[in-house]
Image 1 (cartoon, rainbow, N blue to C red):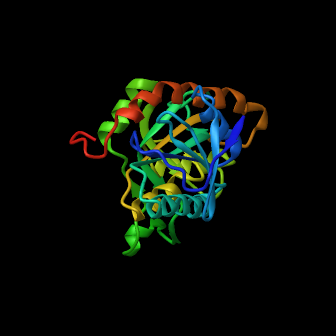
Image 2 (tube, one colour):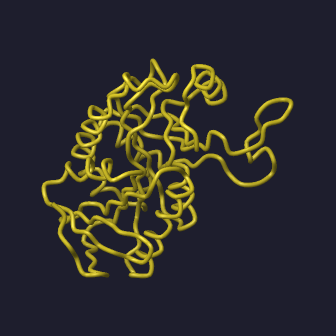
Length: 252
Protein backbone atom coordinates (compact mmCIF):
# COMPACT_ATOMS: atom_id res chain seq x y z
CA UNK A 1 0.00 0.00 0.00
CA UNK A 2 1.30 3.47 -0.92
CA UNK A 3 -0.26 6.64 0.44
CA UNK A 4 -0.13 10.07 -1.18
CA UNK A 5 1.61 13.05 0.41
CA UNK A 6 1.59 16.75 -0.31
CA UNK A 7 4.61 18.04 -2.20
CA UNK A 8 7.27 19.36 0.16
CA UNK A 9 5.88 17.68 3.29
CA UNK A 10 9.05 16.89 5.23
CA UNK A 11 10.10 15.45 8.57
CA UNK A 12 13.55 15.97 10.09
CA UNK A 13 13.39 14.13 13.42
CA UNK A 14 16.00 11.56 12.27
CA UNK A 15 18.97 11.76 9.90
CA UNK A 16 17.45 11.82 6.44
CA UNK A 17 18.53 8.84 4.36
CA UNK A 18 17.89 8.12 0.70
CA UNK A 19 17.88 4.50 -0.47
CA UNK A 20 18.29 4.23 -4.24
CA UNK A 21 17.47 0.94 -5.96
CA UNK A 22 17.41 0.23 -9.68
CA UNK A 23 13.83 -1.00 -10.07
CA UNK A 24 10.56 -0.89 -8.10
CA UNK A 25 10.72 -4.55 -7.06
CA UNK A 26 13.97 -3.84 -5.18
CA UNK A 27 12.50 -0.67 -3.69
CA UNK A 28 9.48 -2.62 -2.50
CA UNK A 29 11.72 -5.30 -0.97
CA UNK A 30 13.38 -2.59 1.14
CA UNK A 31 9.98 -1.14 2.07
CA UNK A 32 8.80 -4.51 3.39
CA UNK A 33 11.41 -4.27 6.17
CA UNK A 34 9.42 -1.42 7.73
CA UNK A 35 6.03 -1.82 9.44
CA UNK A 36 4.29 1.27 8.09
CA UNK A 37 3.34 1.89 4.45
CA UNK A 38 5.32 4.28 2.33
CA UNK A 39 4.00 7.66 1.26
CA UNK A 40 4.42 8.60 -2.39
CA UNK A 41 5.94 12.04 -2.78
CA UNK A 42 6.46 13.82 -6.10
CA UNK A 43 9.43 16.14 -6.26
CA UNK A 44 10.92 17.98 -9.25
CA UNK A 45 12.38 15.37 -11.56
CA UNK A 46 11.66 12.38 -9.33
CA UNK A 47 9.14 10.40 -7.31
CA UNK A 48 10.04 9.18 -3.82
CA UNK A 49 8.43 6.69 -1.48
CA UNK A 50 8.82 8.06 2.05
CA UNK A 51 8.70 5.73 5.04
CA UNK A 52 7.35 7.22 8.30
CA UNK A 53 8.82 7.17 11.81
CA UNK A 54 12.40 7.89 10.81
CA UNK A 55 12.49 5.44 7.92
CA UNK A 56 14.40 6.30 4.75
CA UNK A 57 13.12 7.75 1.52
CA UNK A 58 13.09 5.16 -1.27
CA UNK A 59 13.90 5.86 -4.90
CA UNK A 60 13.64 3.50 -7.88
CA UNK A 61 16.42 5.31 -9.70
CA UNK A 62 16.56 3.25 -12.89
CA UNK A 63 18.91 0.70 -14.42
CA UNK A 64 22.52 1.56 -15.21
CA UNK A 65 24.99 4.08 -13.81
CA UNK A 66 23.91 7.05 -15.92
CA UNK A 67 20.21 6.95 -15.07
CA UNK A 68 20.95 6.06 -11.45
CA UNK A 69 23.24 9.08 -11.16
CA UNK A 70 20.71 11.42 -12.78
CA UNK A 71 17.78 10.24 -10.65
CA UNK A 72 19.78 10.30 -7.42
CA UNK A 73 21.07 13.78 -8.21
CA UNK A 74 17.51 14.98 -8.80
CA UNK A 75 16.40 13.62 -5.41
CA UNK A 76 19.41 15.14 -3.65
CA UNK A 77 18.84 18.50 -5.30
CA UNK A 78 15.14 18.51 -4.38
CA UNK A 79 15.96 17.71 -0.75
CA UNK A 80 18.56 20.48 -0.61
CA UNK A 81 16.11 22.99 -2.09
CA UNK A 82 13.54 21.91 0.52
CA UNK A 83 16.07 22.81 3.22
CA UNK A 84 16.30 19.20 4.49
CA UNK A 85 19.26 17.57 2.74
CA UNK A 86 20.03 13.90 3.08
CA UNK A 87 22.74 12.74 5.47
CA UNK A 88 23.42 9.48 3.63
CA UNK A 89 22.66 7.79 0.31
CA UNK A 90 22.42 3.99 0.15
CA UNK A 91 22.64 2.17 -3.17
CA UNK A 92 20.80 -1.11 -2.59
CA UNK A 93 19.49 -4.04 -4.54
CA UNK A 94 20.38 -7.43 -5.90
CA UNK A 95 23.47 -8.28 -7.92
CA UNK A 96 25.89 -10.91 -9.07
CA UNK A 97 28.34 -12.47 -6.63
CA UNK A 98 31.86 -13.71 -7.30
CA UNK A 99 32.15 -17.33 -6.20
CA UNK A 100 33.12 -18.77 -3.81
CA UNK A 101 33.29 -15.64 -1.65
CA UNK A 102 29.79 -14.29 -2.31
CA UNK A 103 27.35 -17.17 -2.90
CA UNK A 104 23.73 -16.77 -3.93
CA UNK A 105 21.62 -15.47 -1.04
CA UNK A 106 24.52 -13.80 0.74
CA UNK A 107 24.98 -10.08 1.41
CA UNK A 108 27.84 -7.81 0.37
CA UNK A 109 28.51 -4.32 1.73
CA UNK A 110 30.90 -2.21 -0.32
CA UNK A 111 34.00 -0.81 1.28
CA UNK A 112 34.91 0.26 -2.25
CA UNK A 113 32.44 1.21 -5.00
CA UNK A 114 34.36 0.89 -8.26
CA UNK A 115 33.53 1.51 -11.91
CA UNK A 116 34.74 -1.67 -13.59
CA UNK A 117 34.89 -0.42 -17.17
CA UNK A 118 35.47 3.36 -16.99
CA UNK A 119 38.69 3.91 -18.91
CA UNK A 120 40.40 2.88 -22.10
CA UNK A 121 41.53 -0.34 -23.73
CA UNK A 122 45.17 -0.20 -24.89
CA UNK A 123 47.64 -2.59 -26.48
CA UNK A 124 48.96 -3.21 -22.99
CA UNK A 125 45.54 -3.81 -21.46
CA UNK A 126 42.84 -1.79 -19.74
CA UNK A 127 43.66 1.60 -18.20
CA UNK A 128 41.23 3.09 -15.67
CA UNK A 129 40.28 6.69 -16.23
CA UNK A 130 42.46 7.76 -13.31
CA UNK A 131 45.53 6.45 -15.15
CA UNK A 132 44.54 8.69 -18.04
CA UNK A 133 44.88 11.69 -15.74
CA UNK A 134 41.30 12.60 -14.85
CA UNK A 135 38.18 11.51 -13.04
CA UNK A 136 37.79 8.84 -10.41
CA UNK A 137 36.89 5.17 -10.50
CA UNK A 138 36.38 4.39 -6.81
CA UNK A 139 34.35 5.81 -3.94
CA UNK A 140 34.92 4.73 -0.33
CA UNK A 141 31.92 4.52 2.01
CA UNK A 142 32.53 5.50 5.66
CA UNK A 143 34.60 2.69 7.20
CA UNK A 144 32.80 2.74 10.54
CA UNK A 145 29.42 2.53 8.87
CA UNK A 146 30.54 -0.36 6.68
CA UNK A 147 31.72 -2.21 9.80
CA UNK A 148 28.43 -1.53 11.59
CA UNK A 149 26.42 -2.77 8.60
CA UNK A 150 28.54 -5.91 8.36
CA UNK A 151 28.04 -6.63 12.06
CA UNK A 152 24.29 -6.01 11.97
CA UNK A 153 23.48 -7.92 8.78
CA UNK A 154 26.27 -10.45 8.34
CA UNK A 155 27.21 -8.83 5.03
CA UNK A 156 30.75 -9.40 3.83
CA UNK A 157 32.75 -6.20 3.15
CA UNK A 158 34.57 -5.88 -0.14
CA UNK A 159 34.61 -4.20 -3.52
CA UNK A 160 31.35 -3.93 -5.44
CA UNK A 161 31.89 -3.31 -9.15
CA UNK A 162 29.63 -1.20 -11.33
CA UNK A 163 29.35 -1.90 -15.03
CA UNK A 164 27.08 -0.92 -17.88
CA UNK A 165 27.06 -4.52 -19.08
CA UNK A 166 26.32 -7.51 -16.87
CA UNK A 167 28.99 -10.21 -17.03
CA UNK A 168 27.86 -13.20 -19.09
CA UNK A 169 30.96 -15.36 -19.55
CA UNK A 170 33.52 -17.11 -17.38
CA UNK A 171 36.27 -15.29 -19.26
CA UNK A 172 34.85 -11.87 -18.38
CA UNK A 173 34.36 -12.91 -14.75
CA UNK A 174 37.97 -14.04 -14.51
CA UNK A 175 39.19 -10.82 -16.15
CA UNK A 176 37.26 -8.67 -13.68
CA UNK A 177 38.52 -10.65 -10.72
CA UNK A 178 42.10 -10.35 -11.99
CA UNK A 179 41.73 -6.56 -12.28
CA UNK A 180 39.89 -6.27 -8.98
CA UNK A 181 41.07 -9.05 -6.62
CA UNK A 182 38.85 -7.83 -3.77
CA UNK A 183 35.69 -7.78 -5.86
CA UNK A 184 32.79 -9.63 -4.25
CA UNK A 185 29.84 -8.47 -6.35
CA UNK A 186 28.84 -6.61 -9.48
CA UNK A 187 25.81 -4.46 -10.23
CA UNK A 188 24.94 -1.59 -12.55
CA UNK A 189 24.11 1.41 -10.35
CA UNK A 190 26.39 1.84 -7.33
CA UNK A 191 29.06 4.00 -8.95
CA UNK A 192 26.45 6.28 -10.51
CA UNK A 193 24.71 6.73 -7.16
CA UNK A 194 28.08 7.38 -5.52
CA UNK A 195 29.00 10.02 -8.12
CA UNK A 196 25.76 11.90 -7.45
CA UNK A 197 26.27 11.66 -3.69
CA UNK A 198 29.86 12.90 -3.97
CA UNK A 199 28.74 15.88 -6.06
CA UNK A 200 26.45 16.85 -3.17
CA UNK A 201 29.00 16.11 -0.46
CA UNK A 202 26.89 13.28 0.96
CA UNK A 203 28.37 9.95 2.16
CA UNK A 204 27.36 6.81 0.28
CA UNK A 205 26.87 3.15 1.13
CA UNK A 206 26.20 0.16 -1.14
CA UNK A 207 24.49 -3.07 -0.05
CA UNK A 208 23.86 -5.99 -2.41
CA UNK A 209 22.01 -9.26 -1.97
CA UNK A 210 23.46 -11.86 -4.33
CA UNK A 211 20.94 -13.28 -6.81
CA UNK A 212 23.29 -15.11 -9.19
CA UNK A 213 26.92 -16.02 -9.69
CA UNK A 214 29.06 -13.68 -11.80
CA UNK A 215 29.92 -15.65 -14.93
CA UNK A 216 28.07 -17.51 -17.69
CA UNK A 217 24.54 -16.20 -18.11
CA UNK A 218 22.38 -19.01 -16.75
CA UNK A 219 18.87 -17.92 -15.82
CA UNK A 220 18.21 -21.28 -14.18
CA UNK A 221 20.82 -20.34 -11.58
CA UNK A 222 19.17 -17.02 -10.70
CA UNK A 223 17.53 -16.80 -7.27
CA UNK A 224 15.91 -13.40 -7.48
CA UNK A 225 13.19 -14.13 -4.93
CA UNK A 226 15.75 -15.42 -2.43
CA UNK A 227 17.93 -12.35 -2.94
CA UNK A 228 14.99 -9.95 -2.53
CA UNK A 229 14.07 -11.73 0.69
CA UNK A 230 17.66 -11.34 1.91
CA UNK A 231 17.47 -7.63 1.07
CA UNK A 232 14.29 -7.22 3.14
CA UNK A 233 15.83 -9.10 6.05
CA UNK A 234 18.99 -6.99 5.84
CA UNK A 235 17.12 -3.70 6.02
CA UNK A 236 15.12 -4.97 8.98
CA UNK A 237 18.41 -5.46 10.81
CA UNK A 238 19.91 -2.31 9.34
CA UNK A 239 17.18 0.13 10.38
CA UNK A 240 18.58 0.80 13.91
CA UNK A 241 22.07 1.31 12.47
CA UNK A 242 20.83 3.88 9.96
CA UNK A 243 18.74 5.73 12.56
CA UNK A 244 21.67 6.07 14.95
CA UNK A 245 24.35 6.85 12.39
CA UNK A 246 25.60 10.42 12.02
CA UNK A 247 27.95 11.80 9.36
CA UNK A 248 29.78 13.61 12.17
CA UNK A 249 30.71 10.34 13.85
CA UNK A 250 34.54 10.47 14.15
CA UNK A 251 34.63 6.70 13.51
CA UNK A 252 32.24 6.92 10.53
